[in-house]
Image 1: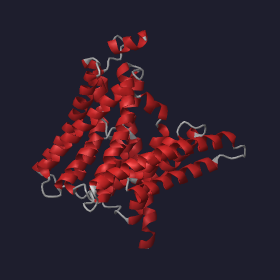
Image 2: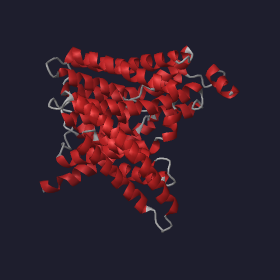
Image 3: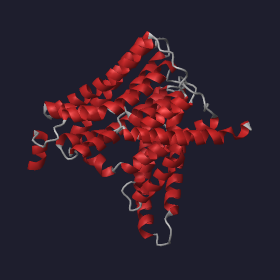
Image 4: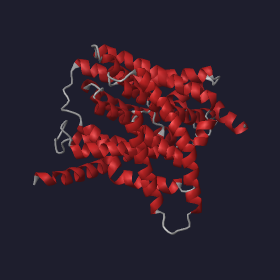
Length: 398
């Protein structure tokens, strides 16, 4: 009977994440919040109905690859080129400030000869930005095409790339037997490889999609997904670069082609049906029964506060340096606060590598939920929906 337990576990995960996802939607929150809560409630932390297993762990790893492949498909190479110097400055400061503040928090709770890499990884987690909830909120307020709205979206694209680079570097440094210089060299070689392969295969995919006259489209999504898996394998096996980096690059290569929307839709179906629910629930399953102490409660509050302040200060300062107004700069910072699934992906990578101390797991999960909820609230406070705001007027004049 126990040999078939995985079927029950998967059924409970799928049903639980769906029910709580719908509940989250009712509360005007992303479904990912509900999926997290479902994993926490189903796992050892609360009811203990589902236990972590090798199957769930494997599906979770594939889920990360699928999510990052989908992120690459949604990212326009043209947008990367057009992001410009202003967005780059905002993104860099939006990474450096959370990285430093996260490292400082880690030093308060985690000391020892090997603690520096673990504390650095905590900082990497705080650098993450997920603008999905921001985009929905800006659309609702009619602020997508404002100057600050455009800056948020452009900076978020660069922030994703910088975050992946930071994750790759820290993941490589986690193994003390690896020479740092060699790690950096491999990263450079990987990106050279990615650019060369990207140029060639982007043209190859574009030509195939445009000239293939045979009926049926399923082969496009199958070949594309297989390509993502191959890139994930190559990046990890040959360059020591995180597999999710390879899958993200695979998505970038296919983005902008004539069948990209179809592939994205099919990958989205695969993700929606099984992979994503298992991934998000698996994070919650890793939680042990919560025993709140004064120290842990302070850490949770500290992380939540720093997660907001670090992005508002970092990205806001970048906005001021790029000659945005004070109001616009605050808006840019608030729009970059949400960590969402990106932080979960990074945290999952840290747990897999054993460089995320268990003391930080619960606070990080709660921090992700907090930033996901608080971002729409902050945006509605700093934007004026009436349309008499200078940000809107500048957009209209242009």
